Length: 288
Image (tube, rainbow, N blue to C red; front, side, top):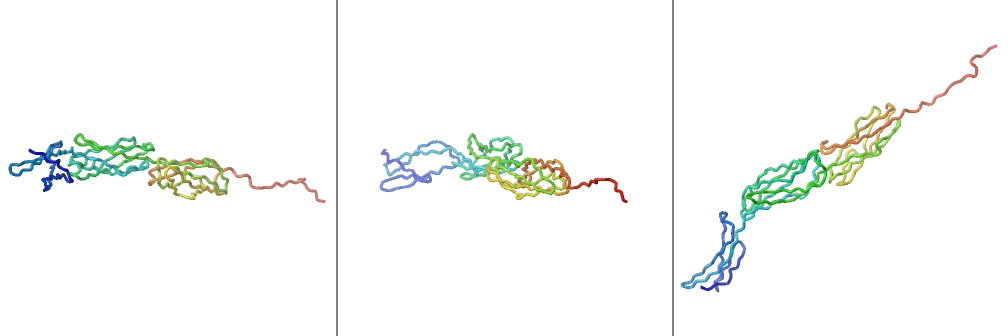
């Protein structure tokens, strides 16, 4: 029996068999029921009493899957939520339920919808991961590992979560404004861990006779930067002298995220109004 030249593999599982001078293509169809493994295939050509063959190795890989996540990075404010999209892709005929999980971060609740996905053979199954960030979470940058497990197989993908917040400060922290005068305070909001959301400013605990206004009632700090507004305090003639504590409020995301700063306002007692005295050199007058 003569051995022919090696069989030449081509796309789509095809094999080229050369029977000089003729050529034929043999296609190998692997069904889902085939067992993974390595097999030797013999292709035999017969012509009368003559016979030739060639051998090719067929490898049927184990079914598997890959897991991917998008976006790769997400910024979520305290007391807010954000979502990642999870895709599970079938490889080599895989079509089994995949259970999803995510790294635990204190103060963050991760919920998959659904938590188990089954990709069709050669297809993709998707899930949405919602991260609910409470006010107990610590602002900062965290590495998330999203994992899928099925039939002893696993795959994972990494993503970055930035838990964002802002701080509120004022300068100066104490102010003295006379009656019928105006004073000003600079209010500054600073981004923490990527915060970049509009902040509404307000002031409370104003004493009677004092009015307040901001030159910008809403400010938005750039990512990891600061933004400021000027608070003007007008003290009218109706104000009572004294020391007062005012509360400056910064609210974001529909007042869900809120920070305050305190200002000590002193309204001094005005000096006495100008007056005069009248003195007589003699208290009696004699008339002749």
